Image (cartoon, rainbow over all chains, first blue to last red; front, top):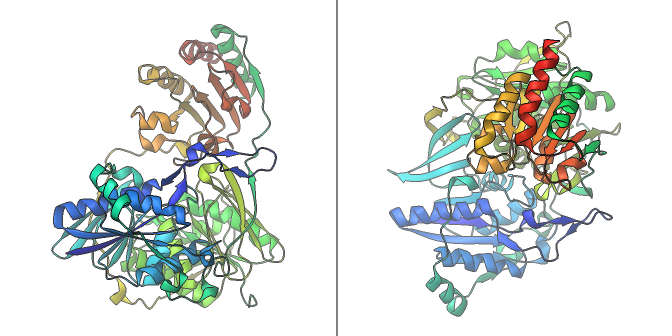
Amino acid sequence: MLKILVCIKQVPDTNEIKIDPVKGTLIREGVPSIMNPDDKAGLEAALRLKDKYGANVTVISMGPMQAQEIIREAIAMGADDGYLLSDFKFAGADTLATSTALCGAIKNFEYDLVIMGRQAIDGDTAQVGPETAELLGIPQISYAASIDYKDGYFIVERKVEDRIYVLKAKAPIVVTVLGESMKPRYMNVARLIDVYRNKQINVWTAEKTNTPAEKLGLKGSPTQVKESFGKQLKAAGTVMDNLDPQEAAKVIAKTLAEKHYL
Amino acid sequence: MLEGYKDVYVFAETRDGKIQDIAFELLGKGREIADITSSKLHAILVGYNVSKEAKKLIGYGADEVIVVDDKCLENYLTEQYVQATYHIINERHPNIVLIGATSIGRDLAPRLSARLKTGLTADCTKLEGEASGALFMTRPAFGGNLMATIVSPNTRPQMSTVRPGVMQKLHYDESRKGEVTTVKVPFDASKFKVEVVEIKRENKKQVKIEDAKILVSCGRGVGKANLHLLEDLATELHATVSGSRAVVDDGIIEQARQVGQTGKTVRPNVYFALGISGAIQHIAGMENSEFIIAINKDKFANIFQIADLGIVGDVKKIVPLLVEEIKKIKAQ
């Protein structure tokens, strides 16, 4: 039976985020936390393989204790088991330090396939999948639109700008999945009740990653945030709200002509 | 530990043996950083049958082009390309490496930076070099709601992927002088574990909204039934139709025409935002347009904050009249 690990991240729903216009910082209060959409599609890809061929699907997340919520959600969707890496030693990790921690955790498992979302909506880097694959020393296929398994090979459709690469590779590999490619299933209500009543989420500290502390968190991060700021919009131009359509058309056409755009 | 790392290196992405625009954009910015840091600008050209393209990179600003030309690089495959670029970087010790934030670059760069055990900043929209050699890399996060400036103080090379369409290429100068160096890479084929089964090309010609001089962009306020009005305007202006994520999600226009954080970044001479409210994710993709004209019924719409000319009104009524007005002016 296939053994699949799926890495999932809890993220603030960036569609709901507001910026403090004075301080230029994020206002996180009241912003819901969700399972990162690309990761959820990755979980769906794993569950489809499970439906088709039978598989053991284990989810791994890294974050505060609150992230147990998305592990419960994953199990309610059909995952078999879940692990949360939670330790202050992971705090402040950039993508390389995050990948180092995930790599350390993944090495505790036997696996054929590691699935991740292409990118998380809070960071938008798309770096943790390939970096983790490199640290694990196994191949990666990113931007996957589908994953199948035939004759001992994973067959993956990698979707890039104007073409689709159909690629194949033997286990073990890392695949990062495009969110728009797979609509995730809903949670199963019976499983959801069961996970809250009976299921213990495994919580691991940094020790389980077998990694020296200087390679984790802020200390293990080669990149640092120097500053962050809200976006400066350029100065507003002219806004006219008292023109009838004919006048408006004339104003626009005249402006285009004056500026030699015609 | 930072002694001995010097110069700026740019990865020149090719597809089907042709250098992509992003490479020239990186050279434009790379030239500026190389000059500020008193160093040289090198392009790394990796592919199969690509040597003949090397001179173009010099014309766009490179002092040296390092070519790796090998049959195993015919199609982009991660391990092959990482081995080729890693070999060069490991020999040369660059201070800065820039790679396009394309689907190839965002696959290659993180694998490469992890092999080099160095930092990587994703999808930058602003880069500033300092005489000391430090690079300040600014990028959007949280869906474009927040900008962050990232530094890599203790490791080299400083690496970033750069969003296509943001940096400006230099004017091509055929008389520029530079060297072309061919490098033979000792590939370890035993690590090539991913095979190509098939490459499916999308048949229809791809629209390149990022190359358009004028974009007529459609928002949810327009609706499918009125798309033809915008197409008429685009025809009259020799413009291209683009749109917001909302209309792509609604299936009104195809994804290749999407402007914004999850679509393309564009900087046309004129950008018409028609029935577009101006979500921050959309603005992230078009704010550098030279002249922005917005029409929206809602006078409080966000788009008016960045429009050079904003008209509060109905797109459906104004656009057909605008087409007539433009015809009149042209006839004069």
